[in-house]
Length: 516
Image (cartoon, rainbow, N blue to C red; front, side):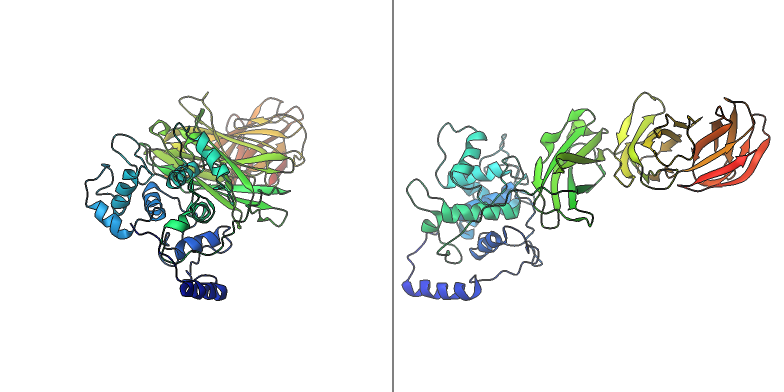
């Protein structure tokens, strides 16, 4: 173990001169930390030789801190060296899940930290080296390193209290259950090195030698409170909409927050996250339930699937506070080896614009009472996994202000429910095969016309390309009106007589065929 030696006056003077002119004795040219609020801590951890980049001049500031990496950093803070870790790696392994894994490089560090009782296993002689650390986990490790752990401390409550009382949460938006990223770890660790005294009054910089001499002063800026923006909005996307079944799969949920008509990045604002598997709350499987956006307005958390999630729709939601209220957006995923992917867009069929109050759901044809909701964004787009099978597709929307005629109109797949413009549309049953992707024909147009046929009777509207047929019911004033997918159609009566032919329907357009 290497301990700090007495510095000569000459060395101190030289270091001060170097740091005055350059800021750091050994600059580290990371290209991915500009505007990161913890940039200074990242550079200092690298200068001291505690943290290194991940290659290609990248630091990966938002990458997770896992238990293998935590063991190495903790070892450095206790004064251990690479030579110590290599020697410890030659001893009998304390845990059975290190050797032969991508984390075997940390074997010695893990042995050392287990012997020091700084890091402990997860049971059954396992260490779980790849598991991510929450903020409170790293606080616990630092509390032990700095000898502030006391017998009988309750976890996590007392350790969260230590984060505050020792000042380890300074400069951070601290939430104990949030997964700690590499930049946040750099911030908390530099605070521990420079600012926190052990019970004997010494700091880490007083007893441990690092690759470079510590700075004479270290300032920890307080983290700004999260901002609240007017006219804010968010978009939500997933790293994978479909992952293999069996549990243990990771899905990254990324939110981009904007504000104002120009959709500028909403930086340093709070995003809340929620997830359910069917009707079951799965929020506990998230790496964090809240995250703060970066300078680009982006925040991410991860979800780890359970075996119990298999073949159940996972509903992810994210929310942002704006204009005195929370707004949220949703998206779906599924852990399944037998899922298909559907996507499309829903528009107001009367004018082609984005519709309001849109709801989309799937009902299995063998269980039509079941309803699986699908999230639709503000522009009408949707994308979702679905278990292979046959489904009816149901759409609800409001088209107030765009209806060309008042009244209640009905058809085999369409209904205007009231004069307020509430509409219900059913799309012909479709069969989805596992592994395939499908674009749903949900961008529709409208056909209307009047006929002298009796009220309540029907006309049959056939697409000429494939004989796809929908029925329109004649209203009290002789008018009919329904939605149709784009194409060319003929209108028939109930005995097969063509009443009107060669009618072209375009999406987002009302085609009035007149009186016949």
